[in-house]
Image 1: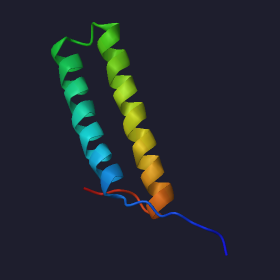
Image 2: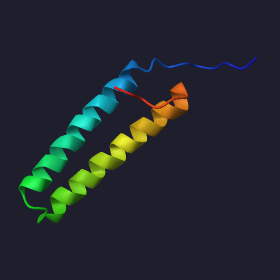
Image 3: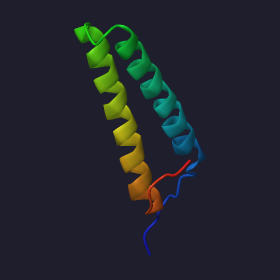
Length: 68
């Protein structure tokens, strides 16, 4: 029998929610700027990547997509 550690998903769910908020804010700021600032675009892309990583980790750990 192997030792398997099961971590609670609450913290990961919290990080997904926070990442969704951060992405929405990054998109809003980028749009307000008229999509003219490459740094804002990079920030949005970074937020997308972080969110995608958290959601994929949740899928692997919970066996289902996170739905808020």
